[in-house]
Length: 90
Image 1 (cartoon, rainbow, N blue to C red):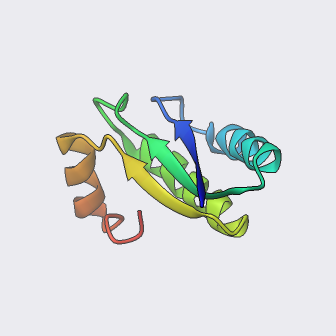
Image 2: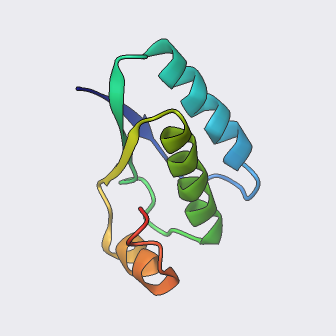
């Protein structure tokens, strides 16, 4: 099963639809990809908007029939995911 890498950096709130469109285009170009590996190593000071973006990306991947995994999760993001209950989902 092929893996496609999608890198995420901090973007302004409301960028979720833009990111979802980017991921959809990438998955359309790579129909053989069964897994989306989201590189979040650039999120050194994650915020609520970043969590929204991650949730939208996961939803986009799952709607396309792909698994979604995070790579490069820093301690701050890991803690934020646990505190919000999103660690189980993402």
